[in-house]
Image 1 (tube, one colour):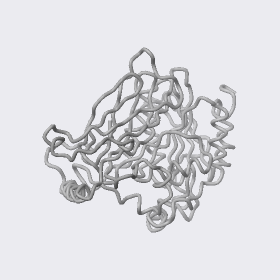
Image 2: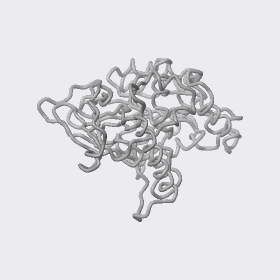
Image 3: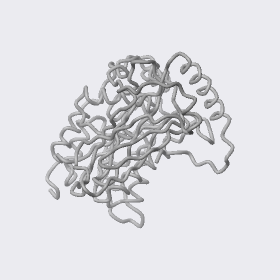
Image 4: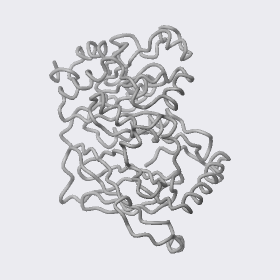
Length: 382
């Protein structure tokens, strides 16, 4: 279920080989001084009978829980990237009445779909899956591991947002420069914000928390999903930022910044395209408000989603960057035609189901525009 870069050849890219060798050596050294695999869990989602569980197995010193969000969220940016994964570990996943043993991938990630027994199905709302380290991938490797008594740190709970068949509206939102001022189009400033600045100093885009709370009030059962090309290493920081600014809680769908089997980095656009398609295929009864900004590629990504599934997009809302931000992003000062003119319509394949598109410089202006779109901030059909 991970968004992997396709690799037609079995020969891995040199970057992936270097990364694997580095982590293999670092892991050997850390295990020698007593570090053990620990679970870092992420919020997943699903229906009453099928869930997507997300986590990562990391090496951590004795007595420290890798999923200690308060500890990780309070660190300076670069420290989130000082992690060593535990690849190819066996992981026991338990949710509802189901249990399944899976393996972490070469970077320690677990991304698995679990079918839940029909009786009883999971109730809608926030539920949990239990993940436990089950040892090395082979019997010989498990026999060679030191015998250590199990501890509570060997397991962790992964939150799951269960969306039932009665849900009709949801929000999928970008994070960088949409909910949070990151200045991604300005590489040096973005690097400072990401790696140097203390995570607690991040600022919300003006008016966006209020807009999202209005959306949650207008649609009390609506799920919020935060989709970003940011690294999973920052998940604890992002969760803390969203909570601190009173954004509605929801799963984070992030990516791995490390090398792939075919190159140095994954495609951010491919990650977002695949994540949108998966959400829409799992929940065909939900119409989504897609929220992003025009500093990168959100407009094009959302246009492709509308073309594929026009009946599942209620509206598209694009935050316009200021002229100075656009110039530094390599765009025309007015942002060009990326976001479309105010009140424009995105159309699905064959001109089906035109979808309203609005834009604004912040959450306050977007709220004014979305108030004019039937069924988004008001009564459906109004």
